[in-house]
Image (cartoon, rainbow, N blue to C red; front, top):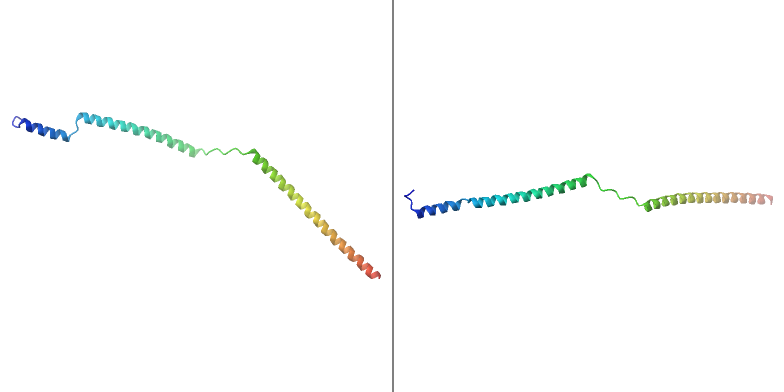
Length: 121
């Protein structure tokens, strides 16, 4: 090696060293990579927790709201009112049918009297 001048050896070594990563740079790269891996691990854990929470939300449907007691009471009253109104209308129909039957009977009786009166004359 004595045949190569020291200046040339230094120039060649600096060029070769420039191509390769030094131990200090390699250690720094490893530390940065480990930090990124830990950061990604934390993100994956939080994402898994979020996925589990969403799956649980899908599995258990939301609770149905409690029925409003006023709504049930209003429905009961509306049903009772409808039934009472239906009976009232049926009774009204029966009354009008009775009135029509009475009118028809009175007309028949009136005609019969008119016929008897006409025959008597």
